[in-house]
Length: 203
Ligand SMILES: [Zn+2]
Image 1 (cartoon, rainbow, N blue to C red):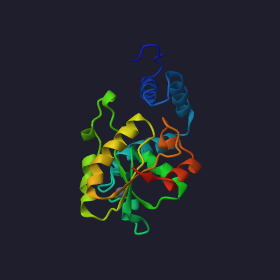
Image 2: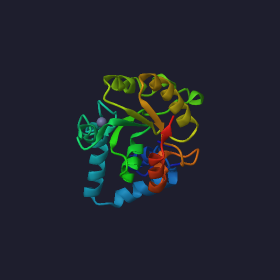
Image 3: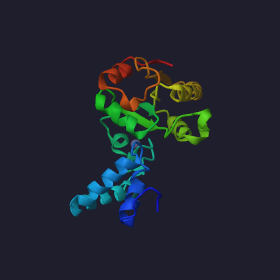
Image 4: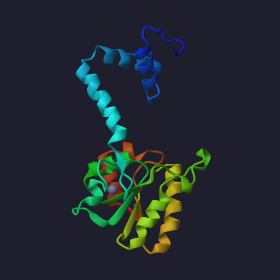
């Protein structure tokens, strides 16, 4: 039992403990959420529990782009409406949501699941670069758009990838122009992101 919690019920304490592990949720918020759920109809808590379980049980990574998906390949990789000659490289699955929201990009994606960060001990081998390089071998991709975050880690990763991909003779462009340095793609607004895609430059 966690110290500082009034042990009225182990079930409530357990939930508070688990909720407080979530990003942005402190002990106070965790308590508030736990007591809210305690009062909520059983149907609602059931649906939440089911959604949490499905999150791990029913999702997988697309074998082509490594996006989170219910079916493999994912709907983007499967679509014949998409331009299969362009691959946009992003750090996280949620970056795709931001880019898709602009409706200006119709190519494919590749998710690195991280960025190179020597200070945090993340090297090139720790993110999904090997899968990307294998994918670029078959000659169907003509342009690679580096859409890693416009911050230190994102820039380092873009530089590394550019050196790796350029010898393949593909067009390599960088998205970040117009995006303020130090931000994350996920939080960029549609207008900024749209001009960043349209104004992408050779890298
Ligand atoms: Zn995919």
